[in-house]
Length: 103
Image 1 (cartoon, rainbow, N blue to C red):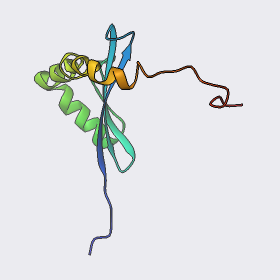
Image 2 (cartoon, helix red, strand yellow):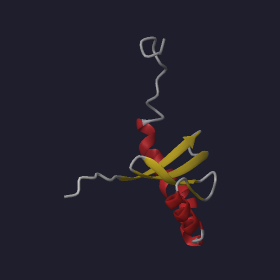
Image 3 (spheres, helix red, strand yellow):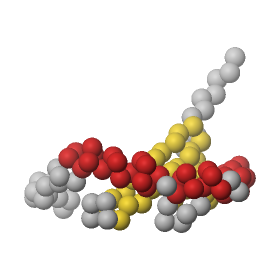
Image 4 (tube, rainbow, N blue to C red):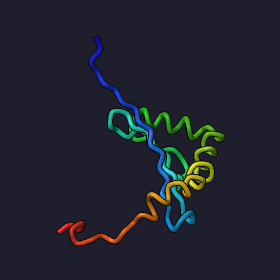
């Protein structure tokens, strides 16, 4: 019987600065807690962090349509979701009180 537990995780993050004026999209692919592949819209291409990740980055960067799709995520994924997430993140910020501050 197999006893191993394997986990693959994909993270898609949107970082908003000054509303949607400056937006950054980050895709991270993780296997067993190890980051192996990442796309950052500020960089504009995939970067690998393991031998498998480097091979995947080379493959994905060679596909113009896939690369354009990732680069366009700012417009089809991040910006449309800003009005949905802003009330729960941006608009809920409050100044820290003394009890919340780290001594």
